Length: 336
Image (cartoon, rainbow, N blue to C red; front, side, top):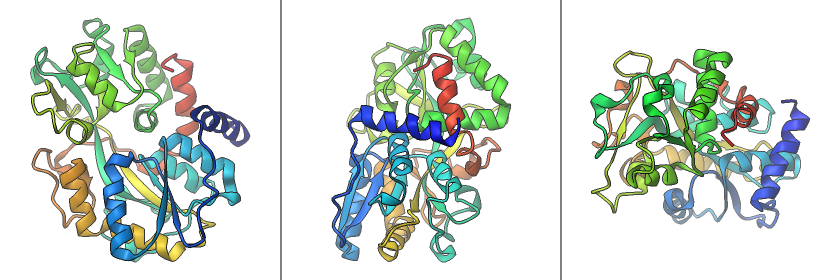
C-alpha cells in the first residue's frame, strides 16, 4: 500500500473509532500514546509519575489506530512517547523516521532480538502466540503442533481469532516473513473457508472458548492470566505450537519509542529506563504475566522459560515492512 493510501486508510480507522488528536497536553506533561490496555499499564505508569515526579497524560487506544494517528498528525502531534502493543507498529513508525534514537545505555538490559538494531525502539515485555483451548473438550495431545493443520476439516467451525487486533496483524506479518506471502494467503483463505470465527479482541476470543462457542483460538499467552485471574476454574489452557516439530511459534514484544519531535525527550528517556528497570519488569512478570525482557527478572512460574521456547526466525524489525500488506491481506481474504 503506498504511503498516501496508508495514511488515508488509517485516518479512516481513527475517525471510525472516534479518536481525536491529543493536542491539549500541557507543556509540563509527558504525553503517552498507549496501545497497551489501561488496566494493564496504568498502575505502573502511576508509579512512574510518583517515583520520578514526571506529570503524564495518557491517551489509550488500539495500537494500529494510534500508529495511524501518529502518521496523520506527523510533526503536529503532541505525543512524546508511543507505548505499543506490538513491534510491527513501532517498526512502521521507525521506517518513516518518526522515532528518535534511544541512548544505548537505556536499552542494554534487553537482548538484541527484542529491540531495533538502529536504536529507534525497545521491547518492554515479551508475548508468545499460543493456541488457547477448551480443556473440557480437548487435551494437548489433540492439538496440532503445526498451525497450518487448523485448516483441516476436523477443525471446521471450531477455531477463532481477533483479526483486527494489532497482535494478529503482526502475526500475519511474521507468517509472511517465515513462510512467504502465497502460503500465508492460502492459510488465511483456508481458515476462512473452514468456518473460523472472528472476534473483536483476545479477551472475547478466550471467553468464546470458555463458553464452548469455539474449541480453540489464536491469541497472546498472557490474556488467560491477566484478564481471567479471578476465574481460576476457567476451562481454558494455553498450548505453544511448533515445539515438537521445531518450527516454533511467534514471540512478539510490547515496546516503546520516543517521538522524534518530542520536546520532553529527557522525561521520555526516564520512562523508558523506568519500564526496563527491575521493579517495573517484576510488575509485568507478576501482575500481567508477560515475559520480562530484563534478564535480571524471572518470568512467572506459570510460563515456560522464554529462552526455552522455539520461535520463528523472523527479526521483529521486519514486521513493520509488511504491516500495510498484512492489513490488506486480512481484509482481502474476508476475515474483517
